[in-house]
Image 1 (cartoon, rainbow, N blue to C red):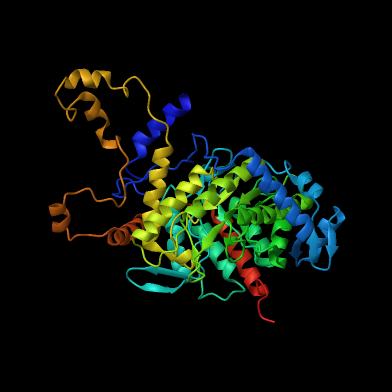
Image 2: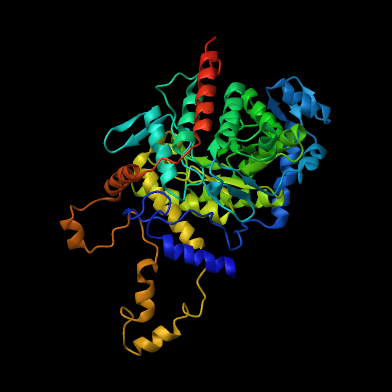
Length: 516
């Protein structure tokens, strides 16, 4: 009860503007907080049907096996009793079952600014921005390859908007050589934001550079880093039933370093998975459980997130489809599977639209409905994802901010205080009266309801007189306003100096080898 009262007070004080960045700025914004799912997630399948998927996944791993390209990973699994035949590994069900229950059900992820640390797991929800597209777009400059300057703008937006809990990875930086790109991106993120960051597992040097930069940013010892997760990575299996060298390395080393590994099979029904959703979910589950087993063999108790990214393809073109009924069902079942294993659950806000239009909106709304009601803890690509992940859009980022804030407000508990029940207000208005001037309305009207970022509630004549602005045009103005209002977070000069020295040294050493 006390916690609910505190949250209501915080909403009344902060629902109209950011308390962190721009006092008095016109962009409506909820205060920083971590949303929580206060209702029961939707169970699409029965417990027996979930067990069917579990047992089928164990059969897949045992009988068909996983192709694993990293010798060290094969050695770890082989030492645990898996049958290794070249690069094929048959993982016995006893190995998988032994790994279930070792990873923590919930844990804290630590940010450079402790106020932006958050819980992963349980009923807690974390929203991340779009991650990793090679391209970006906006109304002014169109669709283009991402550059470091574009990524910096996305980082600033991540810092400015309170509903984004993780900064990055954002858009790729095609104008920086691939060998040092990860260094420049991470340095920009750490200097421009004080939120939890991302580290890439696409190479050993990239991974360890990212982890070390997370440690430097917090000003902590190596021993403290091992005990306090401070960054995360996403490992996508090479569906169907394959795990390449860098991804397997990422699972192992993130576990050993005590950092957060999110294993997410990319199982598109009809292409990289069986055409039936049940079959695609069996494959998703098998690949995720293989990652869990490898993680816990590397370090029992390492933080691990069960990822689901099962959708379908357009059988006319072969293109990925998102925000579909099939995707929504997969989100719900993925959540049930994660809860069966007592693991935090990662899912996504997705769409396949090529412009910031009605399709982009409705596919994101359906994706988010499945993600939230599926009990998602880590909602990846929460803001800015377009074209099935090929583009990071500045305008879509703002559309999604409005959607995420709407979800946050929806998840807030209903005010059931004596004043909120409204008896005195009804007495004051009387039968046939109105409530515009009652004491209750006058005391609450400024923050009584959620203030949208983009929705235009003017009548037609007023809207037309204002130039008939579309949501995309308004979003274009809003992201520019947010950048103008952005305030760079403070950083200890000694930490900034150590960070610069590290980037300079690793740049001189060549970063991640790419040219052979």
